[in-house]
Amino acid sequence: MNKAKTSKNSGRRTRQFDCVIIGAGPAGLTALEYLARFHRSAVALGANGPRPRLLWIDRTYNLPGYPEGVNGRVLHNRLRAQAEEMGGQVRDETATKVEGKDGDWTIHLSDKSKLRARKIILAMGVRDRVPDIPDVEKHIGHFLRYCPVCDGYEHTGKKLGIIGSGGSVARHALFLETFSNDITIFLHGKSPNTLGRYRSLLKQKGIAVEPARIAKIIESRADPVSDYVGSGVCLEDGGERELSVLYGALGCDLHLDSVNHLNFKLDEDGYIITNIHQETSVPGIYAAGDLVSQINQISVAFGQATIAAVRIHNTLDDGPKPE
Ligand SMILES: Cc1cc2nc3c(=O)[nH]c(=O)nc-3n(C[C@H](O)[C@H](O)[C@H](O)COP(=O)(O)OP(=O)(O)OC[C@H]3O[C@@H](n4cnc5c(N)ncnc54)[C@H](O)[C@@H]3O)c2cc1C
Image (cartoon, rainbow, N blue to C red; front, side):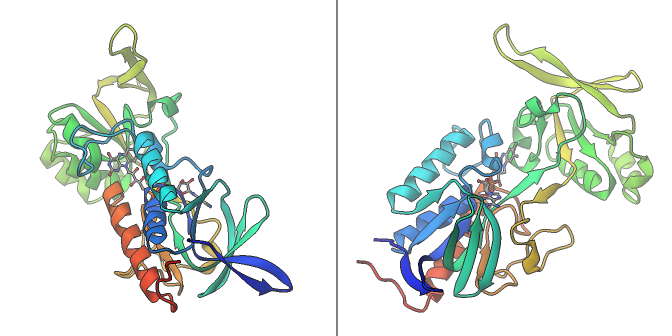
C-alpha cells in the first residue's frame, strides 16, 4: 500500500509520489497522516531540517484535548509515529528546489537526489527573528516568548514586556491588555516616533514605552537546582525592569528559499495566500501551517493540512485505489 508509482523519464525509472510534503512539523505530518490513510503515496521531507517551531515549546496548554499540557517534542514524536504507522514516509533531506508543473513536479533534495510528485504541499514553517541581546538563545520559549495567543493566559496579571518597533509592536502590546495592565514596550534603541499614530493610544491605555536598548537579561534561579531563568532586563542606560516574560514582536522569516522562484502570491507581510482549499496561486501546490497568511497555531496547522490533504485526494484524477 501507499507505494509511489514508477514511470519512465528520460530513459531512467523515477518514482512519482501522489504528494511530496515539504516540511515535517505539525502541518506536514498531519497532511502525511491523512494522505496515507487515503492510501496515497506521500512523503514528508525535512525531518532534519531547520528546527520546527513546535520543538521550541516547553509545554503548550492551549491545544484542544490537552488540558494538562503537552511538550512540543512529545507531540512531534506522536505525530510522526502516527503518520508512519499509516504508511507515510518521513525523510531527513530538505528540499532545495522545485521545478515542473501541476501533475509532474520534480523536487531536488539536499543529498542531490530528486523526487517526483503529482502534487506538493508546502509546510516549511517560519523562523522567528531573535533580538540582539547577549545569551538570548537560551531564553527562547522560556523568558523570551513569541506567542501571547498561546501562553498569555499563563501570565495573567503579571509584568509583561514586548520588544519590537512600529505599528506591529503597538498592536501586539494592545493585545497583551487581554492578560495584564502592566505592559512595557521595549523599542531596543528605536525611536518612539516609529509607533506613529499608536503613540497617543498607548499613552491613554497606560502602556509604557522604553526606548533604551536592552543590555542583558536578568537571571535568577527558580529554585536551588533549576537552570537560571529570566526575571527582567537591564537597560543600556543603567535602568532595570522586572518582568515575568518578554514577548518578541520582531516578525519572522519564511523558509521559502527552495520555492521562491515560483512567485507565489503573498500578503503584505510576506505570508503565502491560499484559497479555502489551501491551494496557492501556483496550480498543484498547496500550503499549510505557519507560512500561510493566518494565525500561527498548532490547531490551525492541523486544520489547514487536513483541508489540503482531502482536497488533493479528491482532485487527483484516479480516485482512491486501496490495494
Ligand atoms: C516558543 C514558541 C511557543 C509556541 N507555543 C505554542 C502553543 O502553545 N500553542 C500553539 O498552538 N502554537 C504554539 N506555537 C506555534 C507553533 O509552534 C506553530 O504554529 C507550529 O509549529 C506550526 O507548524 P508548521 O508545521 O507550520 O511549522 P514548523 O513546526 O516550524 O515545522 C516546519 C518544518 O518544515 C521543515 N522545513 C523547513 N524548510 C524546509 C525545506 N526546505 N525542506 C524540507 N523541510 C523544511 C522544518 O525543518 C520543520 O520540520 C509556538 C511557537 C513558538 C516558537
